[in-house]
Image (cartoon, rainbow, N blue to C red; front, side, top):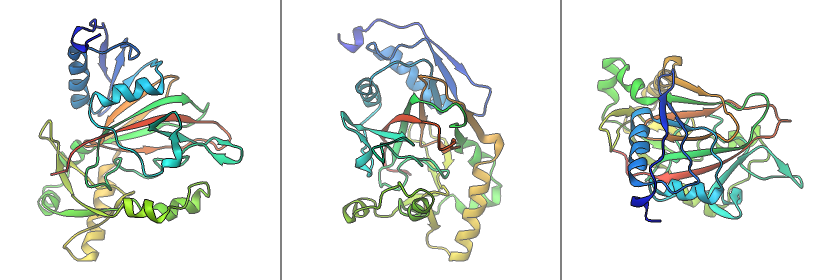
Length: 291
C-alpha cells in the first residue's frame, strides 16, 4: 500500500508531567504509517524530545522499518551485539547464554548522547522493551535545551563558541573494570571511533534551539583553552546539565518503545539487580554534523 494512501489512525499524544516527553497512545506501528500520521509523530518528537509509544507489539524488522522513516540507520561499533536476524538492531541486555552475554549489559552507565563520539552523531534512538526486570531498569532523560537556557549568562558567553573532544574510549576501560563481560576492542574497532571535535553548544537543525552538547561519558576536554579551565568548565557543565528539574525518569512498562532526540537530550540507565533479566532492542538514526 502506498504510504500516502495508508489509512489514518486515531491516536493521542499526551504530554507527560515532566520537563520533557509525551505518550503516544493508540498508534499501531505494525500497520503502515501514512505521511500525515508520520508528520504528526515527527512534530511531537521535536516538541517533546521523548516519545513513549505504549503497548507497541512489533517485530525487530518493523522497528527497523519505522526507524528508517526518520533517516539512515547507524550500526554500533560492538557488532557482536547485533541482533543476528536484524543487524541494524543493537541488543541491550544483561542476559547471558552459554556463559556469554547476548547484548550490551552496561549501556548507559554514564550520562551521554548516543554516538556523540562520531563525526555525524545520532539524530535519535528507539528502544523497544522485550524483557523487563521486576525492580529497577529505569531510563533517565535530561533536557539540554533547558540546561542551556538556564546556564548562567557569564558561562554562556564563555562556552558558546568553544569546541570539545568526544571519544568513545573515554570511559571504556573504566566500564570493563566494572563489567568484565564488556568485550575488549579490536584495533579495527578502535580505528572506527577516533576522537572527534564537537561544539559545546549545538543548534538543533530542525527547531533552531540551542542545547548543551557535552557529556560525562564521551567528552574528554574542551579544546584550545588551558587544561585546568577545561576541567573546571566540564565539571560545572556536567553538574548543571543533569539537575533534577531537567529530568524525566522513564519507568518501563511491557512493550514500551521510547524514541528520543539525541540532539536535545542526555540519557542515563539507572540499572537493575544483576539477577533480573532485562532485554531491549535499540535502533539508532543518523543525524547531521553538529553546528
